[in-house]
Length: 430
Picture (cartoon, rainbow, N blue to C red):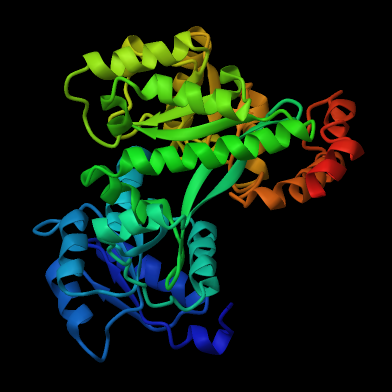
């Protein structure tokens, strides 16, 4: 909720800079913007004393990076030790890459960073960051994630508590719905819907990932069969752990399940996410190559982070590359992200792979993908993961959005309008 002018008077701001002129300048700017409670410090040591004081403990700190004795990076680390719970704005004359890296460091320390100011400081930019601060809602207390045991996960698999949600993938040029990614959830009897980051790792560590993947595959393929019978041919993507690729019978298992469901292998994408380094390459290479021979598609997920690398593209016959969300969202406004995005997209095209941009969060991201010629996209701007029953309604809404918001490229409206015919919709909803 936005704070009123009177509430601004109660916000305590600390300006930390070793240059007396900058302290006076920033104090003057803050006062003109309606924030009179400003304390200045010319050293990290003095600033930490202020943080610890019950009388002048700041809600917001403007922190210079280049200072003698204690630089801004060390000061941020000290703020954690002093249990600082407020927000931070970085101020520096350093280049953009250094400032962006420092922002990520502050976020890693679990301190709210509103952004950075380049010297000489622009009053308009300072005002925009302060507006961002005053519009922030009071932070909710962080809920500690529940740690589940191997026995609990084993029971969840056995009791059928795992459910699949599906996130659409769409063609960027036309808006056509091409497929869905299967994302498993745990419908916990007490805790409600539990997300995979809280139980996939447990399954991998305790030898349960094969049973979990088998459960997900069976349900996803059964759902794909229902869609096909209704006249809706969607390419089905399922996440596969590297730990699934230790058993030589995995390709035959997947092929058997697909055949039983009546889903052609070429309509199935296995998205490989490497959460840990591979050991002996021979078995996973054999399994993945056999899967390609059986006409399943292989996707390298979260490309550019973790262990996903150029070496994997060299060694494994992937035919889809998913550009990680951290290189997609706001790449249009960030030179570093743009360079990594461009390189990933170009690499996919040169290798004859389909490129999928993850993390499309807003219209600007979508327009950027259209300008740069990315093939497929998924993200919250398009749709959040949803139960299978919600897909028909979403597809109709998406068709309308394509037309009303002009999301499809020029000359594509007639194609996008035919995304779903009424016969298909009727079958899906019956």
